[in-house]
Amino acid sequence: MPTTFQKRQKEMKRQEKARMKAEKRAQKKLEGGSTEEEELQVLTAPRPLDEEFAGPLPYERGRE
Image (cartoon, rainbow, N blue to C red; front, side, top):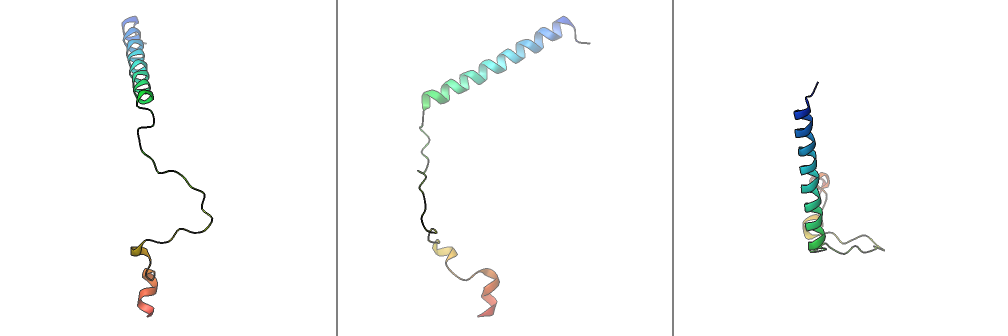
């Protein structure tokens, strides 16, 4: 069974972890949307394939 000292140490560790997490959240909030993400768009048709994918499929290459 934990002693009073161990309980206090455990609670202090929990509080420190919560404080660090809150600081991290606050820092992220200050930075705002600084991470540049690609804007999402609604597609009405399939996207064109990149050049590396435009050729025949690997299993179709031997049939030519």
